[in-house]
Image 1 (cartoon, rainbow, N blue to C red):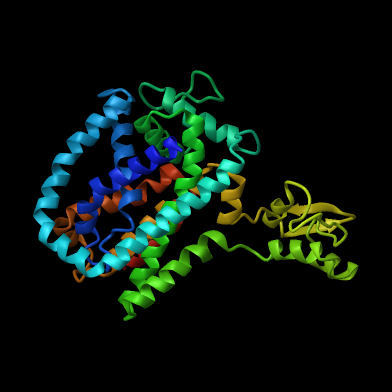
Image 2 (cartoon, rainbow, N blue to C red; image 1 turned 180 degrees about the vertical axis):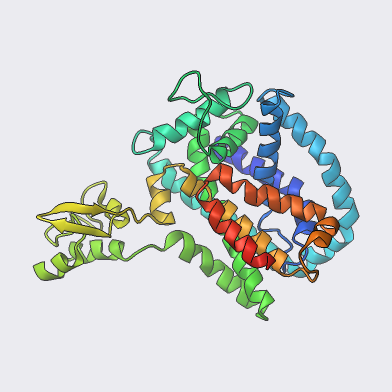
Length: 375
């Protein structure tokens, strides 16, 4: 309980430090970047620690992080003083949105804390690999960290998502296993908050009311992070004994034959939900000829692998927020824009560029979105 509370306080503190910068950076968006401050802060401060460790300027310790944040507080306070009146006016006018933002974040954080607490073991699928990467970062005085699978070599992988989990673990003084499980709760919470803000902004920009923006904003995280394919529904159809042999054969999902039941309100067996990630398959005599993986966020969060394709979600939303903000610029993009928007250009380079270090496969997608925005 105390570990979860300290983790929550840490991410809130990072968000508060970054809030004035986000308020100025996302000045064209209706929510002024309030829903993106936390993931932006986590990327920025983790990157600073990585640079300090990579250049051997400072070691990877809790003290280094605290000093770094204390130094960062000075420009943050300066920006707060500079925008205080505007910030107060914004908060006074948009307080329902600010409250809803935190409710969404805290709600998803608590939801996944509860789910993770029921199965905290880090002992299956790719969890040991991900935990090893978090542990390797925590045990490294300087960077790059040593590869836990190839002694004497540095990690040759896009490990920045693991690095950010280790950053928060180092800051709060937690062991890697606790940080791992809290990271599983933090990722959907930040993704939910960012998705809420992205949809809220789109609704408002297209002329919708604040109420409409908040309603659709609240629906968006449920659709993106909780909804999946219909295989889960089919599990309960099977549980009720509905459907004939022909129907289940036509459906063609391995293990979903219509013959299995359950002793209660849920199907028997601890892994029945896993079938939802393997709905595209070609069966011959009950054997798989094709084993296409069809994961979706809800499945990945339940599985609990702290893998790059999971940790990337809030930072992809951050990238989309940057592109939306950029698309609202009244000045034509080009060299003149770069000269007059240096800080925004630097932020775009850092946050979208960081996707290559979090989950490389997302960079081409976000680069294409950015290019389309810039045209």
